[in-house]
Image 1 (tube, rainbow, N blue to C red):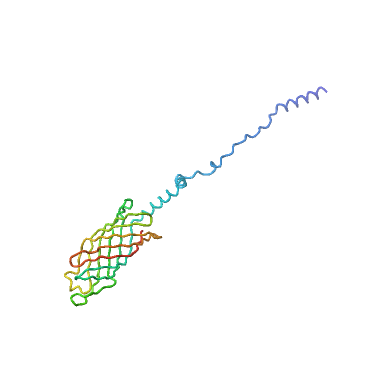
Image 2: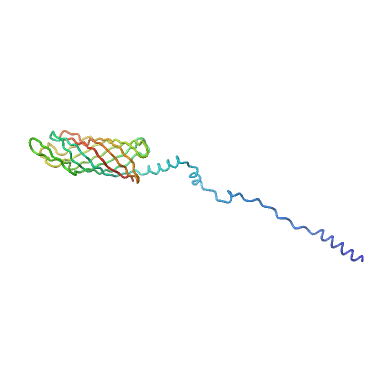
Length: 220
């Protein structure tokens, strides 16, 4: 009987000394913003940009296009032999923008034109027909932009022109002089510009040529 009591006492003592299982330490949940990858600095700047900043960024991209080319239909008024002729001609133009970020925008522009139709008039009782065989010019162009769509510009340079037809009546069929003009342009979609222009092409002793033009150009 004493032995049984001693065995029970030893068992109770062993159970009392056995360590209790430890409870797992709870872990704090990871915040959601730390689970996802942080955005790059470029993405963060893009998100922080408002509409005005985005428009400015697009304008800077657009200003990277510094060349343009186009064509015009010209309605000319030509004074020669004491009378006025009104031939029609075409003109091709190519330009390079030198200072796109300045006000006004400064460019160099070259022209080359040729006749489409001639015109005739009576000189000393004879019917004299004249047209513009060709003309060419080099200009400095200054443009002031009123908005993203509307602008005005001025041209100043030197031009040379040669007449065709009954040029035997002229003292000289080829003349060069100072040349200048004014124009307005409207920006259409796809970087196409529609322009109206008036120009004094040649102002010389033998003849003078002025013109009004309607044309278009593409910026690239």
